[in-house]
Length: 199
Image (tube, rainbow, N blue to C red):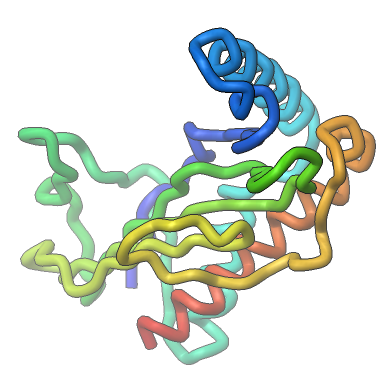
């Protein structure tokens, strides 16, 4: 199996689905949106300043878990899907492997959902697409949602880091190492489920 390049999520997000937006009206929504954008920017800056990269962990964990199940997987770090007619195109990829695995992150971050003062919990989305090595026909495709139980139709929910909760954004940032560890645990849980589904 050939694994295509995996990059960092382009959708890091720190969201409070209650709070100021619950005040109603345009003012409440604008204030909440600005606050969440600011918090997301602070989270991303701290993430970029650290050494953990979820994309690298995802590559390593996929290789490790597939190998443990008896499936050899090679990483094609320079190969990735291109966009053609508003769709992913794999026709340019040349490999002697029987299958191609395309994996990418959706939103990654923390969500506080519900009434006021609900804690933040980790959330990430990972898309997994398996293609025939020669024809590039899609053989399997799933979206995995881990941590926060989002209402995503057709997605596979994966429970993870259920004890990692942060009462406030300040506490989340104050224990940033733990917050990233929780996201890493969710990434690993998705890999375990995805490999199990594909083997």
